[in-house]
Amino acid sequence: MLRYLLSLALTFALALPAVAAEKKNVLLLVADDLGLMVGCYGDTVAKTPNIDTLAKTGTRFSHAFASVASCSPSRATLLTGMPTHQNGQYGLAHATHNAHSFRNVRGLPALLAPAGYKSGVIAKLHVQPKEVYPFDMELPGNGRNPIQIAGQAKKFLAETGDKPFFLLVGFTDPHRAGKGFANEKTPEAVPVVKFDASKVPVPYHLPDTPEVRAELAEYYQSVARLDHGVGMVLKELENAKQMDNTLVIFLSDNGIPFPGAKTTLYDSGIHLPLIIRKPGQKAGVVCNAMASWTDITPTILDWCGVKPAPVGKKAAPLLGRSLLPVLEKEKVDGWDMVFASHQFHEITMYYPVRVVRSRTHKYILNLAHGLEYPHASDLWGSDTWQGILKRKDTMMGKREVKAFLKRPKEELYDLEKDPNELTNLLANPKWRDDPGNEVLYAVHKNWLADWRTKTNDPWLIKDQHE
Image (cartoon, rainbow, N blue to C red; front, side):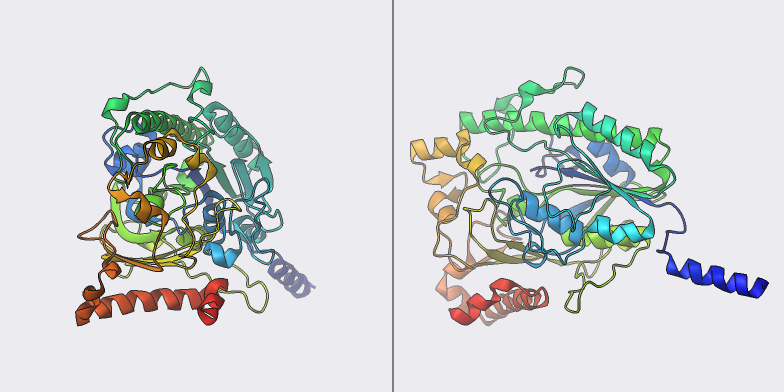
């Protein structure tokens, strides 16, 4: 009888979902439209003490890249480990844009649930459908109100109990709020940090004009409010005595909400902050691994001890890698390439692009290069872009306006000599006469073609038709 009961108990246990041997939680903090305007990334104007402190206690990645520079597609990539053309979240999820991830894809909440994880999202989620991203708790709130966000985090942590958790905090800052950045609506209990427009640095892709400086000063104020929110959420994690068993990840979905950055796959749109703190790790590491947002899901699954189950016969394996093995390393071999993909921002903004970026070069394939490059509505209506139009400027900072709007099929940049991606090497017919240059071009082109094949890029059919 005893042998029978033991056998029955073992059979019963094997039939249950695998639960992590120890409680390992995840806190994913996602900023909205934050570029490298962060103190720990060398910005001397930004006021980000809480983000900077997180970097001092964990690992800051110097070469981290979103795989798309648009809100919903980037968030889908974070939560699935797949580039946007593979997970199906081609554009924005809200309103008439109404883009969906493919229904056979499984996002992190679905992947973690069988291991006993309770999942929650506070404020901005911005992906759909629910069956792909089945969060147990969706806590609505104002993504610009740090007090409300912290209160929701406290509620989630209290209701989670002894279960391991995955909590996504989706801040709205420093996204535009139509005109401006909603700084006039900052809650009274949140410190207001204002900036002198005459002293803010102007990025290379923007003209140095009064309206640009005024908008940048407002933007920096919004970044400071974001930082306060990050600090308040981390304090709630500490108060709940969960800091020592929680992997904390801080990053942004795409670059700054100004022309020349957000929605583009230039580095200004995808080279972003990434800070990871693993309990007990060596503090203050600056890692040079080229990390992609497609690595975030594999990292979280690795930390939680969860292996994703295949979905369907044709489910593609995740191509990203866990970042946990490199967290305490400064110089890493074998992490020297990232890829990027874009289709839409708003539904009216069709402009598919594919990119491979190595340490030294970036190759861009514009799949609809005959079209003029489209603007997001908030960028089009900004004082920055309207000023460019009214003055009929020919330059956007260091880049020609016409070069920004009308692009060739292929672009190749030497990032060591030309970090701002202003001189397209392929625009010079004689450049490829050098055999070494021809090899460099062919290698990057082949890398991208191979990646597109591995990710089953639907736009590959254009290669057959053209």
